[in-house]
Image: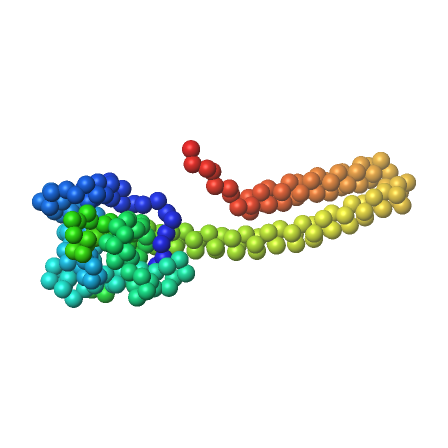
Length: 243
């Protein structure tokens, strides 16, 4: 899953870790921060190995500390904008350590220990170290599987609505043509009767013809208004800019 542009969900945990990592905080304090942030946090070394994780990361991934010896960070399947995996050509964790600079937030996929696929928002944060050769980075993550499922569902519903709108618009156009043709024929017939049989119809008959003509005109107007309302309803709504 490629990098996303949506606003980060990590919030305060990201700010706290950024501040402490960039300041070269005392290891004991940093360890406490690492273990107490509400989001998942893992330590990745230069060899792409996961060497530590906090309780939140264990809960998200289902991994146990002993599992880390056999897990490398390529389980996160980092991908570029086109969806191609980038682990083999340019490891984000290594770039984070070597630069050193933050990468992310981005949106990645992993499989939990039980094989369940999940989506996570991830941010790679460099750790300030006196010896760059011993560098590591912190991978901060949050499970967004439910949010992603919600987004997918909304997109599917929007697509279904768009398809039904096309059908409804076509039906409206067809009805408009058929209705207008019928009203024209009815009005023309009534006016023809009035012109040809005015004497035979008398005043009462002519009033009936007039009412028929007026009724067809009102029906045409009403149907035109209804069609206009349908077209307005089917138009995509413009998103309001944030205040």
